[in-house]
Image 1 (cartoon, helix red, strand yellow):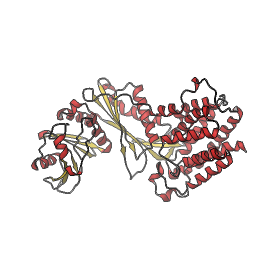
Image 2: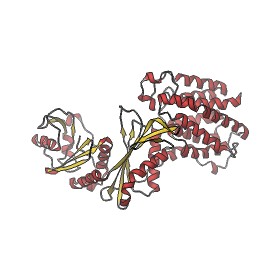
Image 3: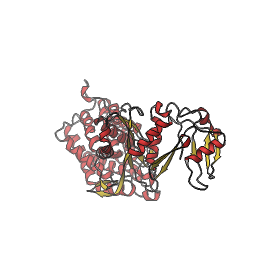
Image 4: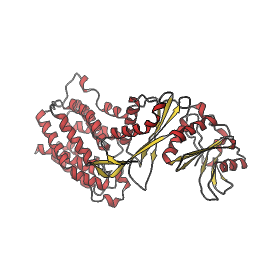
Length: 484
């Protein structure tokens, strides 16, 4: 429970320990008063402060009036105060002395309201009465939906859980479209003259790439529906469940209370465009010449190996992950086989560049994003690199800019990095493949540093290879069969 104080920039002000003064309420609870805020705040008045509950002992539930009384009785009178409480219901009450108390249904709404109070128009933030109107709108009309991964399968595919049960997960695009359609439906009649305050926390720490995908798809949907919006995000942690996912909260706010946000940059497009500027506008020819028949053999053999290995990859990922890695890689491999039919693979750079657009739409999850970034970078580097190993090194280095995972973190990089490094050093695919096998074998004893496995006890992952690393190894082994 806290009352919010923001600087003129909309960001929380910094608190120094020396400025925190403990106060005891009439019911015996201890609160901390930030005296620096009481002297310099510009949110509601020069006497507005920030109070944070630090102790729940004492008789009865701490109410907003208790905070106001404790401050006034110790020489810190307040003219106005907003107390935001995380509860299991929505309720707003205005007390005497312009003291407003709002209860919100869970941490999602709690985070959303705190963000909304900080991003509202300045003319709204300096008026307790206008802020109260914003809070009343939220309590009355905010809608939300939650999507989390589910251990059960649906139609032989990964599943997600929503309020009405679990269903098959196809792509992030389709799942987010369904979520946004659901939360926007009650507000269809108030599209004009409002800005949609959209808050989308990830649950239990999605990866940076997954958050890129989430932000991108929300932006695309809102833009396609010409919805004026102000979008924010946070992270919700639920260690009891451990499952990852996302949740979206939306509330229409009148324009005079909230300004629309400029359209955010397309992070995924930036990733791809920085890796592979337009191949088709180049006047030069690639430095590496490929044979269509040979490249086709490599790709077909590798993809078929991945498709055949899907049950094993899925089994591993069911133990240490969400259970969707096998399906993701299988579907990606099928998409590649379908795409290359009729394509001139001698023009490998152009083909890879356009293939990425197909995979981005049809290959979901973190694995899909990683493969897309790597292939886009490879498509670019194939134009200028003196050899295929050099091109692979360049693509690998570019990929590392977009993930914090490194060698030894129990990810697909434990396969990719030794393969690429050894191939660059020896120009021998068999040696490179052996180092990749050793890397994957090593993941059986590694502690996970990123991804879903970080939420599991080390004993649960011991003896099981990282599914993404194993899946990449299967792909490389299939491709290297052609070299034999």
